[in-house]
Length: 321
Ligand SMILES: Nc1ncnc2c1ncn2[C@@H]1O[C@H](COP(=O)(O)OP(=O)(O)OP(=O)(O)O)[C@@H](O)[C@H]1O
Ligand SMILES: [Mg+2]
Image 1 (cartoon, rainbow, N blue to C red):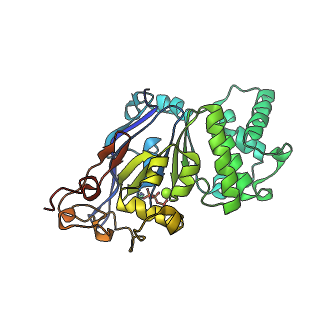
Image 2 (cartoon, protein in one colour):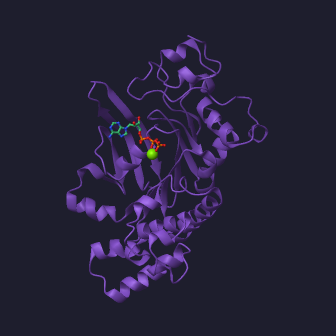
Image 3 (cartoon, helix red, strand yellow):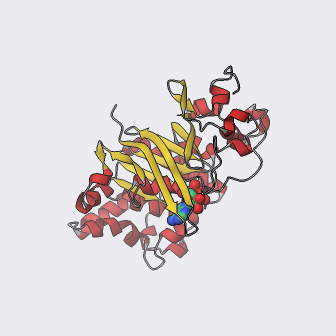
């Protein structure tokens, strides 16, 4: 099947005043099929939100390309991009900041329809009611203001607003991270259900692998601007190969359930403007070999659906150089 979203060699570099360059995203590839949810996980600062902005062309790429429905989004005119943006929407982490405190729920959800224009008042009302039902907001809530809503309800409003113009693709950037754990599960369930019902594709961003598992079929694990492991969620959960993925999993699962002897990695993510030579995970890696400091690893197939960027685990018999 043709992919809905294809990302190739995508990079974003920010020059700093000091003359150094932050490689926020450093050459990544992935694709998302129609109706598929791809999870993107990794620690704070690894480049997830930068990927989100690049995919929606809210910022310009330093290198590489993003195709949506077969079209390179860098080639689009402002007008074409505006049309395309209806098909791709984003939901942010913090619903408290995403809603105008002086706007009712109705006004917030109706906003994209009003901006688009051409909607009769009765049609707007009907559409808002339909969207509210879809995201599980009770009738009568449309005249409430954000301060009268819980965090979960606010995020439901943001999701309804994102769905207003019937997009095909949603980027969800940590959509439940600002919510209570009990509410998180409800929102994740709703997002999974909405995707099924509406045939949506998701790029679902989280620092938590367990959260990704609730919503996505496939997961890409990011470390310092690169994808280090990618595959079906069940496969990556059952058989994580990259030492960084193992550490991330160990952090969210009880050790015995995870069945992994590898302890969580020590230390912090490196500075993206001072990347080590060779493998960028090497300074924190429990499996590090001398050769890791020399060769920057690329993703290699371990099965036709599972890719890992670590020769130590993908070529365990290779002679250490
Ligand atoms: N405008 C910018 N100028 C300079 N550096 C930036 C800019 N935006 C992001 N960065 C840097 O790029 C890297 C990736 O940032 P990004 O926000 O994409 O990470 P993230 O994975 O979304 O983190 P978090 O989990 O905290 O949201 C970080 O090192 C960040 O400091
Ligand atoms: Mg982010």
